[in-house]
Image 1 (cartoon, rainbow, N blue to C red):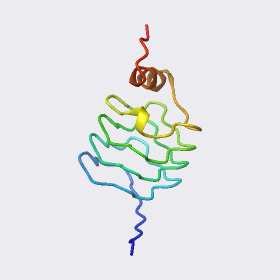
Image 2 (tube, rainbow, N blue to C red):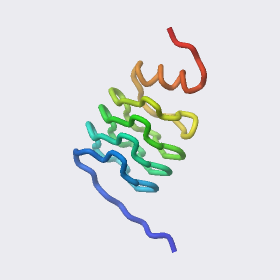
Image 3 (spheres, rainbow, N blue to C red):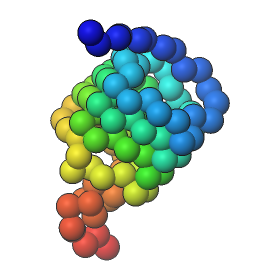
Length: 106
């Protein structure tokens, strides 16, 4: 039997936490720090992730459709491990995305 837990996060520093398979749908998560957090298979669909710090966070198999990542720090995130279709990004995330696929961006 699989236990289903929904939580609401409001502000704070969630660095190094285990948030695997958490359901964080349609939440305002702006400015939260997820430095090296484990968000494996987390459902973040349609959440506002602007200005979050996802430095080296594990977002593998996470659902990010409809999220807004503008202003978020995505350094060290493996973009190949999750789907980005429908995700809003700014130029900084687009550059990190391209570099994760081996592109050389000037």
